[in-house]
Amino acid sequence: MAVAAPSHPVGHEGLVMNQTHAEVTRDVVATLGKPSRGYVLLLLGAATVFLIGLLSFLILVKDGLGHAGYQPPIFWSVYITTFVFWVGIGHAGTLISAILFLFRSPWRTAVYRSTEVMTVFAVMTAALFPIIHIGRQWIFYWLLPYPNQRFLWPNFKSPLIWDVFAISTYFTVSATFLVFGLIPDVAAVRDKVSGWRKTAYGLASVGWRGTDNQWRHYSRAYLYLAALATPLVLSVHSVVSWDFAVSIVPGWHGTIFAPYFVAGAIYSGIGMVLTLIIPLRRALGVEHMITPEYHFDNLAKLTLLTGSILFYAYGMEYFVAWYSGNIFEQTTFYRRAFGPYWWAGWTMIICNAFVSQLLWFRKIRTNLTSLFIISIFINIGMWFERFVIIVSSLSNDYIPWAWDQLNPTWADWAILAGSFGWFAMWFLLFAKTFPIVAIQEIKEMIPMPRKRGGHH
Amino acid sequence: MGLMNRGRSVPGLLASFAHVDAASDAIRALRAKGHRNMVVYSAAPNHELEEALSHRVSPVRLFTLIGGLTGCAAGFGMTIWMSHDWPLIVGGKPIGSIPPYVVIAFELTILLGALSTVAAVALFAVLMGKRGIAYDPQFSDDQIGIFVPAAGEQTGSLEQMLRAAGAVEVRREAA
Image (cartoon, rainbow over all chains, first blue to last red; front, side):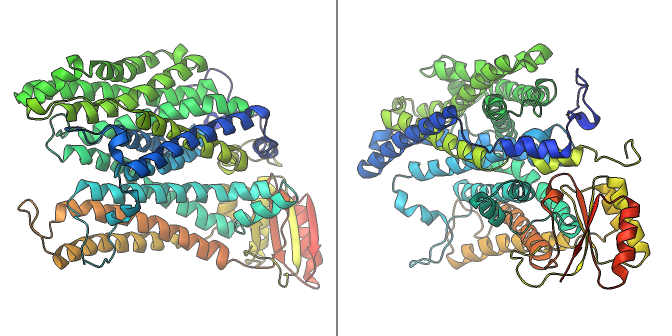
């Protein structure tokens, strides 16, 4: 993305330059101080919501999937919707940390750690949902290719098995990328704290001292990890989209699905990034490092770009349905707007296609209140997009007498809410344990002092 | 530098620099005098220091390549072999049909490529790193550190050279 000239004086590569290396360390290490009462309350709230979800899940395990309201013809509903939603959220992190790293976009530096953390925890949350959905959770390992008593192997022609590989690879690689990037920062924290914390951060920094030899290997490796993670970002949601597109259900069987899902994933991911870091930067006192005029403006432009791709994809879906002359396709799309799920269909179009267009205005892009409100619309809209694609497509299959609707039950809502609690809990714990702003990369952008003065 | 730092320490001089050009001057001066086994500490990678040190490119890229190729071969190998191990015709397609297996091979390419890259860094930067070299916590904050192994007579002249380049502090480290 092009980087606009910021309106207030910032130095080379867009960072606020009136900070020294020592101040960066000090400010970021300060975020790991004693938690405030608000933080503790938020954490307890998140844990409570998670426990409610966990309890509902245990009831579901005991009694079976009947509680989830599955009935013919709809056997994929809120859990699969929520799975796709969380996987999508996970995309912004690696996009910002890997793709924008390769594109040398300097604005990513201050925000990439928080988005990477969001990615790892979002994919971790997502991975729970196929397991919740399968009903007999204790045999989920049947999805993996392992030598079993019956000498059976998984069907590698099935997109559901591709998905197992895609999600587990994505989780492993993004977690590796996060932990790898953290090591020099953990070492910086180690050198600033004392007592048992010094021991703990010392162990976590695995002997990092920032020697020339370490940096030589580290910088190269980081570049290759970014290069490997880049095609991964684009592939994961493509594979998720093929779970649908490879089948022949009207409303799913579209060649546009892979790019459509990837754009939607990045859009929803940045929506969640905005929802998280707008309050976080204030809570942790790093407002001077993540600014509306620069970082949020660029994040909002990325939202506008992906939101516009979604707008196009929504339009193209309707166009193809009409142009194909296929009555099943046409009926599905007519019913999406005017059938029993019209409310979900319009929520998706308004929240994603229309609301994103507000970001053409710079005043809105740099106003944190408006961005925060828009980000909530994006979160809601993107959950509904998946609900519409999955539930409303399944509700009107090829045989009209089999058409039916599904209403989400208490078990659906409780487990959905629980997933937000679970995600928020991990994110909050991380933010107080590890540097949520990348110390090392920010230092890399601030020129070091010179005895002869001037810049390099 | 290693995971544990107990063991014998290397005698030498540990200099701190507040200025990046001073540190690079010192590195160049040391290299000119034939001191090539110094250790330079910095809080972030820095091009000026890299230029002064003129290291060769890190060999981790070879590990990335080998890991990626292994993953790709493993992905195709596993899927094709497993399909033939229990031959079952699905949808009239060949038993071992390549296009769907590309997905698995792709994922394993990335997975093993990434993991072997990290393993290579662990090997070269941590496990094979020099041990017993003096360190100061300022080096992860805002100072650049240079450690030169030295003992006996040469210590005095080296200290002078480091100070002349602009070291803020030079410490003598005994064995």
